[in-house]
Length: 138
Ligand code: SF4
Ligand code: SF4
Image (tube, rainbow, N blue to C red):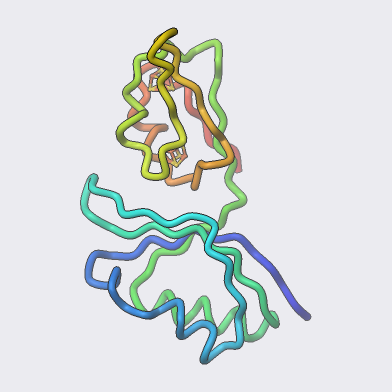
């Protein structure tokens, strides 16, 4: 049975340059589509990649095992991050810490907008937001 799932991969610094994704194609016949990729600076440098992975269930499971054994952290993208608009004070603290740049400051109005479609559910803004306006739903 074929499966297609969206996952977030966290690469430790030592693996950022390694061809681990290529091995998924070559060794496990998986098809991937990179939805987003970035390098975070805080709290330590790591690669972050949002991937749509498609293939036979048994090969998919083997591929995920391979990634885990390689030292990558894997997160399912079933989590959805939203902003409680009533709580947001537009302080801007989330803008610089968000790896894919999901927050945007309008210089004219000083309002911070949240672009949910860019979010990779890393969770950094949840801890950073002073009035706890960012919420994660599982
Ligand atoms: S850190 Fe929180 S309160 Fe500040 S702009 Fe971002 S979402 Fe709004
Ligand atoms: S969880 Fe917050 S910091 Fe992380 S990608 Fe989504 S909006 Fe940005």
